[in-house]
Image (cartoon, rainbow, N blue to C red; front, side):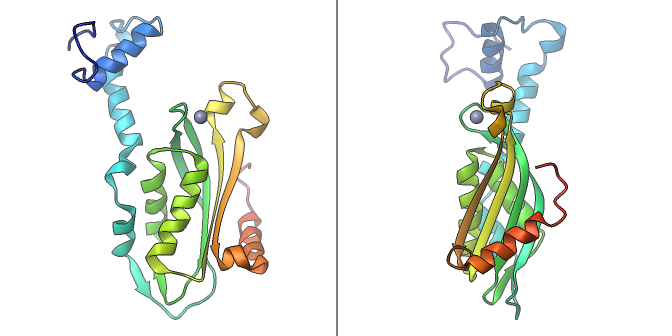
Length: 200
Ligand SMILES: [Zn+2]
């Protein structure tokens, strides 16, 4: 593998070259034993952590819609979520809670965590992630309403020592009856809070 230098333009540099250059600029020695294979590992890890770009969330749901005669709230809570903040490329992670009231169609339960993955394994901000999940469900099954709540901790805040008190952020997106009917929204929030022992 070539060392990055002036005659290598950024576009022709491999991902590994760019990581090696970053290590140099951090004052490290990319040749030392522990760092020797780090550029390859970082390239591989980042590819994995952003694999959501390779997924089509709408297509994902399309194959898993079922017609039902059920009009009570469907709730999937405490789904683990790992993402990277687009401002610092540092992780934020936590729990996602999703609920909807069907209008003739439901989504296969196992598809909800996959949908969350498809959107979270990208460079994100928590607010957009929340909205994207809600809107995707809204479009796929046109339910009475959808609610999505995300509770997450941001390493960019925790590790940099800024606004530590805000390192756990809660965002929500309420559509349809979850937006217009307080009762529906409260039922959802009460169900989330019930035996919520995850430390948030
Ligand atoms: Zn950040």
